[in-house]
Length: 383
Image (cartoon, rainbow, N blue to C red):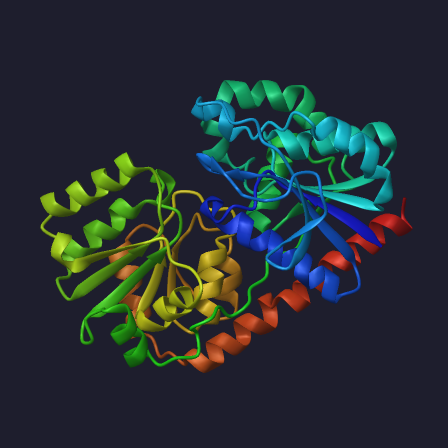
């Protein structure tokens, strides 16, 4: 079975989706699915240094890159327009049994779905949270027009819409109507490098105070992540320190730093910038509580990864993976008072080894890969 996974970008600066696509393809290949990534060479304001329109590898997985048009206009660049996408897809899409398109309101996956419909190729659409209420309210009139015309038809024409939670399933059905086929399969997780060291070693290596109570935030720094609420928590309990790992718009990061100064919390915040590799796992092991207080979060892969590393996890009710983590005893959901949820998590009995085992049993990529393969097989059988 040959499957083409189409996504606008695999650049690390794009956060969870870029990490997830690599692990998804790796898991599928381990389950005898011949999966390949098709992406643009997007890298935020710059471009990835990769071969164009040639078979190559990205993070050791088969990949093909198309050149993104990179004008100095931010909204146009973010659309990830690839001028040669249509030609490449017309020439190559019939080589695949299924196309799995990741993202909505983006050029490359949309073009892939269009070409598949014309060629009679079965495709799966993954909406990646783009149809939830928070997302639809941003540039709402443009998205309503898109859904009423091309985008809605693309999604309704999919053999299945891949959603990662019940919340996302409800959002998709609300946006498109009930007459769509959805398949709920969560994203998976693997233990990052650095997850096998002790808390003491992790704090020493990362230069974090040994005796403080550390709250950890690791994600893109973006207004929807609601980092302001974490700064507020520091003002309510002076024993807390906060490690913020991630990058984002420099002006917004500076606004957050100024807010911390105004609230008198800046001395207890460590800004770590983008972390990856062993530092990612070490940060999870160094912390007391991982907190993701997002206003909207499709799935929340970082929270699942943190839980797999054994750290206590607190998420807002808007993090879609929250109920699934809560069901296996691996997360506390904040429903209004973040500071109380953090205290509740700290006060509860906690066995990090058992938590890690439960999370990996439910969210390990091998398990998830088998579920995605089964979805493909069901689609082909019923075609």
